[in-house]
Amino acid sequence: MATNEERSRWVVHGERLIYDNRWIRLGLVDVEIPGGERFEHHAVHLGRAAMTVLVDDRDRVLMLWRHRFLFDRWGWELPGGLVEVGEDPMETAVREVVEETGYRPVEIEHLITFQPMVGMVDSEHIVFLGRGAELIGEPTGEVEADLIEWIPLKALPDMIARGDIWNSGSLVGLLYARERLNGARG
Image 1 (cartoon, one colour):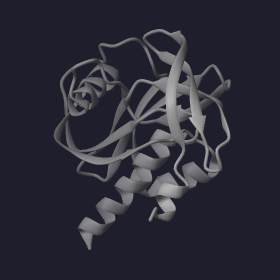
Image 2 (cartoon, one colour):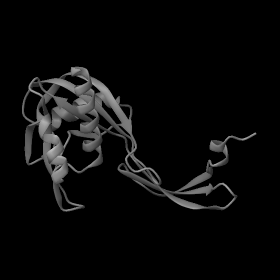
Image 3 (cartoon, helix red, strand yellow):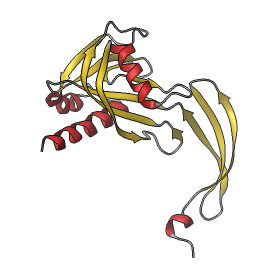
């Protein structure tokens, strides 16, 4: 006898590629929903992203003030970027912190992996928690931020409420890291 989960599972019969480049892949997926209706559903595939919540010994997190042209909006974000083919996401996270800020995490561990836009977008986000930071030089990557600052963890709730931190990767990473760090303090 089929379980409720099995009865409500969509069946994928295949996917037809519509567009593909190094940043995005768009397809039409031939799906069949419970009850037998079959149709094509858009699917957007983005590269995996890795980012780091880097916290220093003064309970501050390293953040970047960035403009996002698509929304014409500024906001504070975590350092991060796309995982290169064959690269371990933790290596990506460390590389991106160094390139974007000039700091290297002293310790780093996996924090959480999530999908921010389920339904028709595959965009895995892998967030790491870094503790301690060593300044090793100036940022070496493209100029990606107008400001690089250490923000007190206690300031985050007000910044989120004001809309200064608004992207999913930063929100999930910061809120989860805050809970992990508060739990570690007892």
